[in-house]
Amino acid sequence: MSINRKQRLETILSGKFVPRYLEVLNESYRHQVPADSETHFKVSMVSSMFTNCPPLARHRMVYKLLNAELSSGLHALSLHLYTEEEWQRFSQVPLSPLCAHAE
Image (cartoon, helix red, strand yellow):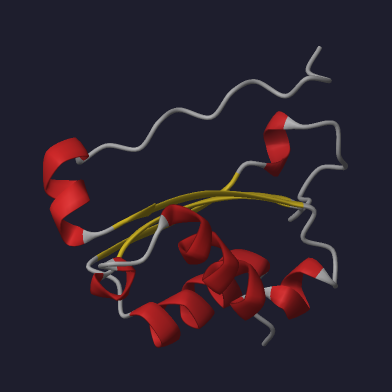
């Protein structure tokens, strides 16, 4: 049985970052794509691996890890990546903006 993209993303990210918190949301339905698409995702993650790592470097780490997914239909990836200390201060992820093409 094949797993869907959400499950693959969770497995890949969990294996590399051993997150304290991980949420992977398929937000494709909010965009003008066919039903059941897996093209737009929001990832919220808290990991000790982000300690002493600037936000841009965190994003680069995730994009490099997910390169195969990005090359095979993953179109958009919204990343919210926190250290454990940052998560204690914020402990909530910003809401995603509406799609520019939403009706």
